[in-house]
Amino acid sequence: MSQVTLKSATELAKAIRDKRIGSAELLELYIERYELFNPGINAIVATDLETARKRAREADKATAKGENWGPLHGLPMTIKDTMQVAGMPCTWGSPELKSFVPRRNAATVQSLIEAGVVIFGKTNVPLFGLDFQSFNEVYGQTNNPWDLNRTPGGSSGGAAAALAAGLTGLEIGSDIGGSIRAPSHYCGVYGHKSTFGIISPLGQVPPLLREFTGDYTTANDLTVSGPLARSADDLDLVMRLIVKSPMFQRKAINIELPPPRKKTLKEYKMGVWLDDAAYPVDASVGDCLQQATDRLITAGVSVTDKHPDINFVDSDRVYRDLLNLATVMAIPPEDFERMKERAATSSPDDRSNYTIFARTVTSTHRYWQELNYQRTILRQKWADYFEDVDVLLCPVTRVPAFPHDHTEIGKRVLHINKRDIPCLDALLPWVGLATVAYLPATIAPVGLTEDKLPVGIQIIGPYLEDHTPIHVAKLMEAVIGGFTPPPAFS
Image (cartoon, rainbow, N blue to C red):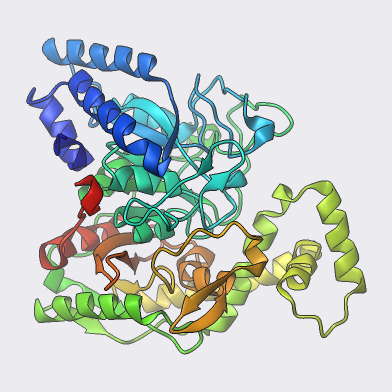
């Protein structure tokens, strides 16, 4: 089986430009791997191979004539099944949308097509993207290529699994609760959660009433898009292509992100926050993160244990309440009515997860404004922190990839240092640090646990300085190493 498919998108795009491989040839290699390996992991859940083959042949004809469609000319890739691709299913994992085929590309997808990609498939997600695993009634369960008994994460779980297994050249995801970052961590690939508001969300809202074909769109609080890939170079390249203002603002507003803060790894000053008494990480993850940090120190990197001047527990509370309010429209009307009743009739002493959730999602707009003000204070404290420190290194989640569990989220538990911890407490706090403050965060693979499960490190950067944490991830590769394919897929 060809190892070409496991190379980075940057390398593959260059190989196509240099005529060392054709787009159609590369596409067939991915289709071959898809047919061999996808039945075991179920990462790619829908395909349009004939359309892809036609476009790949056209890309090769253009190459022969000396034409170049863009930086990703002829590169085969897949798209997360919450993003619209014209002529392909976009189900959001919902049986209600099983037959929905959009007529228009999502803005991000359109940017990638204009850069030359060949889209041949869609990757699996949880129902409406609202789970830490990737399974649904339409397409079933996606498995982690490092251990089929474990999840690849969610909601971009199919994307991360397909990349790790070498089934696709590139992926694009979305993130509100770690949906890019956690799957990257669990599957050993790179991922980038962008600064809030710099990538158009057009074409990423489920059309429960009807398909919307205008240029306006609702910017859902906290939600962002970003790339998943097998190298930091790929993240950098894709971000330069997809960072654009919303369609309706482009006549006047152009977004140009600043370059990385420094040029070499030794020039960067890195904050290190690898554990916390409020949300301790499992030793299997913590040991791997510490080893990676030690290697950076040995390489001469300047590190500090200085943290932002925030209370982690308070930050997590603000984040979770804003997260619940941001996803409230996904709650069916009948369930929402039951939550209103629970919030109104429950005892003040009832602190169960369900009751807290019900109180939050049925609260007043005044409460949202209070949360938003508290978020503003958090954002300022992060800005103050980044005046002295360039990036912060911290965990992604408190655990590595965990076994499949399809029970109700509020009832799930995960094992951390031999203790049972509620699923939400295990998976949300560390990703929430960047999300609530609208900050960019890059995930880079840094090693394996003793059980041979991948561990990624979260590199949080300053607001609007996305290229800084991506650059740090790129420079770290020479010290720590980068993407390594799962043994069964190498």
